Length: 143
Image (cartoon, rainbow, N blue to C red):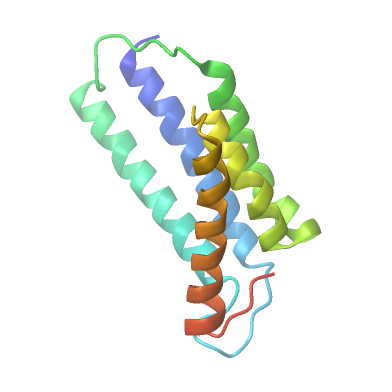
């Protein structure tokens, strides 16, 4: 696969994920506060779309990152992309903490981490950070 095509496919897929997050943020509860439960996914999704657009333009201008790209682990990449798309749906059904407790170690495992300590401690850190930032600092409960 040529690298420019590979770059464009990756940017399109990630931009699509960003668009799903951006549009999905409008369905989250909106209140009169400056920061509510839809603010962070809206910002993150919008930034992802913007950065993917910039990356796609840059890939077209420079001709891609390398002459040829070989994807050595296409199945784990596909699984991770599907998980990213399904995360908001699972979050609506299970809540943020339960979904993140499942998704974060699964991502670590798919990314190649085989250390059980890392696979178990990273979700604890992510959940603690999310609780601290959103609920304690911002006063915004996660769904």
